[in-house]
Image (tube, rainbow, N blue to C red; front, side, top):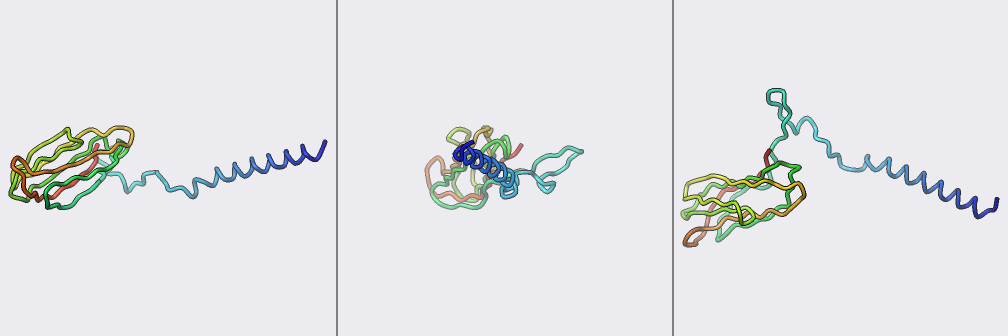
Length: 144
């Protein structure tokens, strides 16, 4: 046996041990993706995940628009709720498709299914039909 083949054996063994050690310790440094019991509510003995709040707040101005990357892992539907606190009607849309219009003082929501893969969803609110500034309270959340 020559020195070159012994060196190759030692190096490949050390590499294998290092790889196994690195892979086995990786989970201790990774963030846990398990859901604790705090993240679930029981109803009639069935475990159900809480809704995931995406965003909420108030807005006043000419038009509201925001985009979030969502996947169905956090809920099969995304809801866009508003309360129209201004003095003009407000039209809301999700991805330019699902839409509804709310008169001053009214509130409600629209929803669309969320795909399995992470995709951008755009939420818009604008005055209708004659323009003007809007004033809204809003909440965006995923639900099952």
